[in-house]
Image (cartoon, rainbow, N blue to C red; front, side, top):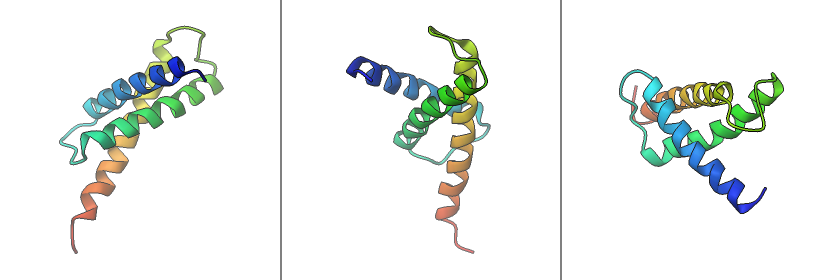
Length: 90
């Protein structure tokens, strides 16, 4: 992967993380840097999943982006739940 490819993946990851956070209802009590990390990881995982089920193309694919956003939303949901429980004492 070239430097341009890595930078592109980071930018897409930031966008995917923000979209994933917007899709999840309610307030997420996680820092923005964690949302960005989730988005970057979701972009890579979503690309892999989209390629595995045949939704990936050489250019821009709305279906691939949709898979990435769904993965990011799931990641934000799970991490926000775990992150908020960390401060709760039972």
